Length: 135
Image (tube, rainbow, N blue to C red; front, side):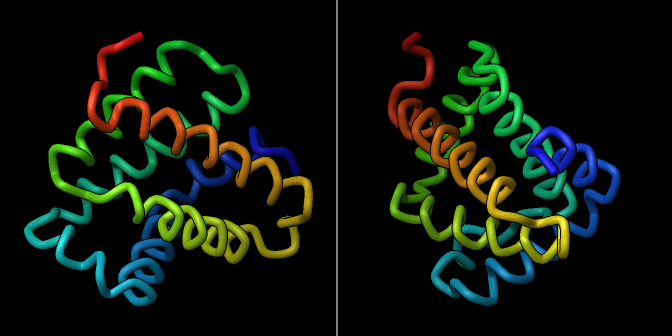
């Protein structure tokens, strides 16, 4: 399975992946809970789903619009005072969740593609962390 098929499966079962992810992320990293006080997790699920679509799209096509979206998302993290040091924890937790979600279809190729995609996206988000509109 390639990342393009993976994102289609995620979109078909988005509530499952989002629930699995936030259950794991908040359980494994109690230090992030403060960033989710008063956050509507239903709305956050939509944001995460859209972000995953952008991550895959940026990885697969490197469209300038997807890079811009990721930069703006990074800047929003800055505005909410979410430290960049949380990005690796988020990515590792997401990779574990993706592996669990895909089960037997999770293989080395898919793992590498998602890891590379998350690394690319994280760099774009961090580029926008303080200055989202510099092209």
